[in-house]
Every structure is written in structure tokens, then in C-alpha cells.
Length: 435
Image (cartoon, rainbow, N blue to C red; front, side, top):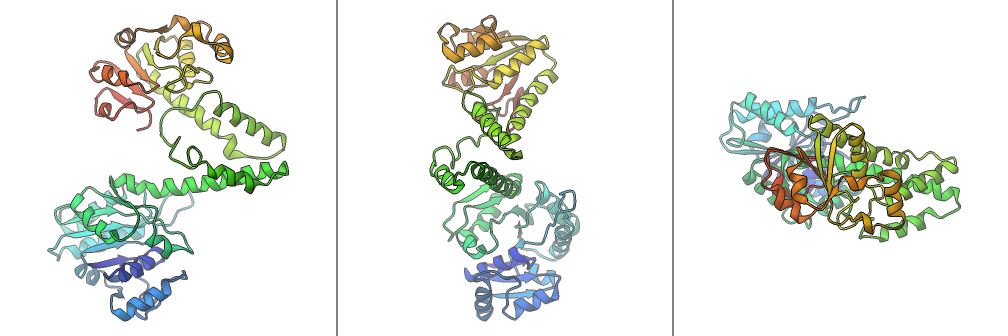
């Protein structure tokens, strides 16, 4: 396939060499004449393991060349991969001047091209950038998106020092698109790689690099805070983390990564406070650990604020325990919401098939007696009455019966804190807490 790569920096140089090594003819484009000359002399523009050898070999085969002429590159390629820099400003916003300038150039060149052209944005950009690029190209070229050209998102997951290894063995290959035919053609570039190819929405693909790297930064900071606590107690933190990482069921897994409502129960809040208190007693600053509870409280407040904003006084709760399949009410975030709403004068009714107050014992019973001793006044075992008697229905646990009952409810607000079922998402009266 004939490919052009705009931007011959870190990502562009690696993409240029690896695509050529996979048998494609690749044209590199850059405004810097030194970089263009380096590629045309068979030399890489960056210092990175193996890339200098790859560029040299592929230059000898004639599969790579570089130019400052964007029109030459567009006219002689089917796919353009945009790898120009998007540096951050002082306040964290991205400077998109380079990428928008490239979009304008591509639009100008596409005026004189009849063949369908695919643009893949490899640069790290904010969600919505592909749409802005497409608008510029339409304006400059006079051509229509997805009729004459398509703009896709194709973020890279390369680490400096292992970029070539990462190119050939990525965690995933991600393509965001609104044109499946164009996505399939772009995906063919990566068909030989071992990773799963995921084709998704444009904005989903655009945000993934930020999500990944922010989580990686969180892991570093969390690891460091655990290390600081362990050192103060003369504990080998690497032994601790090695054991922590062996748990692939909960610790290193997709478990808990489900956007939704706040956490609760008898373990997470207690142990989080315990570790925070330990750090405090050791005179250690642990802002990551200390702010987890604050983040949880914000999620609860967000729910309360939304329910109040609806302007209805009768609210029914489907579920009250801290998660489905249990009667444990300790630190249930739903109870916190209910307590607050009661204090604001709302009328509350609750259905939870697992909660039978007469059967509660021990600390669970003690918790209720201290927090909401009059809970029995609001609980009922009649699901239909809760639905019928409420203007707002809040779903806090996943139960199959809720899906069937709510599928046909139209005249009431449905506020979902757990993503009960995707079949409800398109209902006009439905609100998901963070989806």
C-alpha cells in the first residue's frame, strides 16, 4: 500500500520505518529540511533502539523517501498518517496549530485528487479533533467527508526506548471511525500484528491515550506512596507490591473498572481510612490515597445534586445495600443519598429483596440503628408500589426483575447508578450517572 506520514518526529519516524519494513511504500513529510535529508540519506531522525537499522535497510530497498512537498505526498498515497506534535501550553491545553496546518495543506491537495483518501490521526489529541480536521479539509478542498475522504483516529501506544518492540507487539490496535470501510482498510496495515484490532467511535479512540497515561501516572504515584509507608515501617515495599501484582482476579484485572456510583461496604472505606491514618501517624504526605475518599464523596454529591435538580419530591430507590446480592448496608452510598434527601424534605420509598430488617444482626444491625433507626418506615417488599408511587426511580443495584419492570416505564425519571442494562439507554426518560 502507498502511505504518507506527516511529521518525522518520534512517532512518525517509527511509523515510517515499521510500515516500510512490513512491505508498504512510505513517504515521510516534514517542514524541517534536516529531517527530510536524514530520511533520504537512510538515517533515522531519532535515537531509538533498532529504528536506525530499519530506516537504513528500507531506504536501500526504495520503500521509503521523504519530502517537504505535501502535495507530492497526498497525490502519491492512499492513506495519510498524521504524527505531528501537539505540545501542551502552560495551562495544559494542547497546541493544535501544527495539526490544523497539516489539515489545511491536505485539504488544499485533495482539491485535485479524485481517489478516496484516508487520514489517520496518530498524534495525541483531545476528543472532537478529528471532526475539526474534517471540517477544515471540507472547507479547503470543497469535498465531502466520507464521500471523498475520511478522518480516523489511530492512537499509538509506544514507549521511548522500546518503541519498535511496542509497534510490533502493542497491547491493542485502536481505530476510531465513522466510516467502517475506511476503518477496515486502515486495519489491514496492522493485520500481521498479534494484538486485537478494536474499531470503535472516534471520540472513544481519541480519549484513550489520556485515560491510559493518567492511569499509568496514578499507578506510579500510588506505588510510591505505598513504598513511602512501607519504608517508614521497615517493610520491603517491593515484596509487598510483588505479592499485590500476583492477584490477577481483583488487583490487576478489569474488576472495579466500571464507571458508576460510589463504593461502600465494610471493607473499602474502613481499610482506606486505616491506611490513610497510618500514613498520617508516620508523618507522611499521601495525597493520592488521602483524596480517594474525596473523589467518592464527590460522586455521591453529584447524584444528590442531580436528583434535587429534577424538581420532583417522590423518589423510589431500587436497591439499598452497597451492592447487589447482599444485605450489607454498612457504608452504603445509597443510604447516604437517602439520608440527605430525607433531610431536604423528600418523600422516599425503597425496595430491596435482600434486605429484611428483622433478620439483620451484628454490626450491620448496629449500623442501621445508629444511622437510620426509622428505615423500616421507607422499606417495602412491593416493587410495583415503589415504581407506581414515585416520580423519580433510582436504580442502585443490578437485578434482572428491574430491567423487565422499567422497560415500559415512560412518565417517570429513571436515574441509573449501575448501568442496569443497555436496553434502557435510548429511553428518553433515562439518565445514566456517568455514561
